[in-house]
Length: 122
Image 1: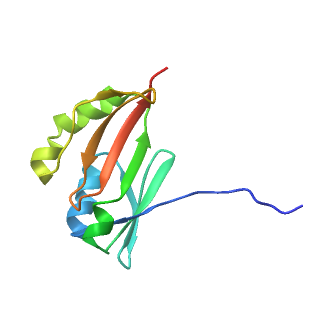
Image 2: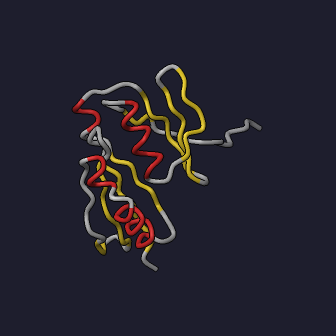
């Protein structure tokens, strides 16, 4: 029988200013585990992505990442506390109840990638 088990799925996230984006992601709570040849590996607990030194405006501004968390209020409060919007000139929305039974907010990164940070609404 063939082994079709998966191990991990990671998105390649573009960065207009690689160094600025690395600081941004560390400030929002991700750990940079490695950084070489224009690819930085970020993780937080059991989620991860690769930040690449590559930028196409149309790609960055049409890419959306979805981060499912246990406590969306805590995430929103932390980002407000560290003034992520002021420090990086990015946008962060208010938390909203969505019709798909989630509460979430959006956060744009310095390159225009949109993050939707959400909690299941049981």
